[in-house]
Image (cartoon, rainbow, N blue to C red; front, side, top):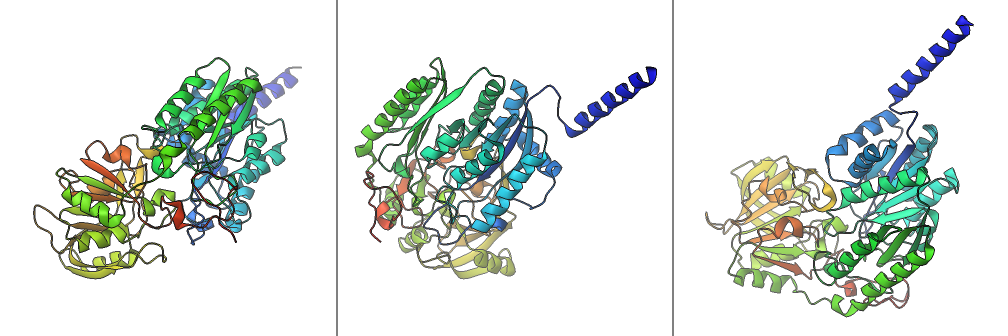
Length: 527
């Protein structure tokens, strides 16, 4: 008897040690975490392949978990998952959680390889009580118009109809009705610029805890207004979206409502379900979900006449910036929105700055060849090279720049404030600062040539390279809405430019063959 008792005690000790070593509590629900995040631009000819993602095929779960939890200090969606799990008594089991910079559609090779890693990783772990999927919502794969839908379909097929699955999406998601059927809860960022990424991850963890404990039974409804919501107007802190965003937050406070999402959609994906969505999740009250989703979608539709663009072209925008009495004037190069899948090497505004003899301007352009020339020349040496306009035929022609190499930098910087996406650590690649011919001590013209495309979500893209942003007359940033939270605090004026490129705000620049018929603000092209 004593022998059997000691044997049982030893086994109990062994199980306890195993659980401690694995990091899992026997008393807490274990929730799998996975995700592939990509914003896919149908008009960018360069496909996104496996090597573009931060992923190592065959990497151990321990290494992936280490990397995942290392991001807990940021303000990202995953950091929100982590904080929410801690608060609500969940254990997270992270597998592959990865992303790539926006660009052209994802290859089948990359997608299938990553999905195999996700499914096998989730299957190989402990028994799961739920799954959190950190996705974007605007991923296009060669064989799948909605890569995000296909992710959820494969996870659902692998784990069956009873597994709780919660999906978090970017504000720019092109949500499909089938996606809402396949998951239990879908939540998108409410804000653009995306300052609430952490909050949405935390919210997802909260709802998951209530689901696995049996406290709630989510049902959801999706309604899609028949329109494109032009990205030029997808600023949730101003008209026309502000009242709708505010109302969505009010609806979420109603008893029985678990989540309300109003997404603007992503107009650079030529797919059937491109466009805005409203998703309302309630606690087992489908009628309420339907009612509020329809009401909020009608509010979107009622603003349609306010979403017609009338922005200056590059030549006029530079002229306006030069004539404006204050500084700095921020020119937003919307046709080369890096965060929207463009190339980062558009030269249209650079050409106008040089041509019109602007003084005191600074801008960033992607040109690894130009950087290499500056590096070989060295600091203080002359620079004479045609930069930009090399990636494709949509973003202008190379512009000859003459000047002097002012500095060479590694291009890494820290953003301590909450900015678009919640990121903290950034890398624009090796960077050369060229003081362009015509500069004066008071009005330097500064071209930052990078080896990586870098979204200008932080003003430190300039500051970290020695640019005094508040002293410059003109700053050019390659984005859309995202940069505003970083630059509005000190900008004298901000001008959104109707520039050509893979992310041009004017749909007339593109041909759409796969969108739905009859969408307000956009025409479907005939093949």
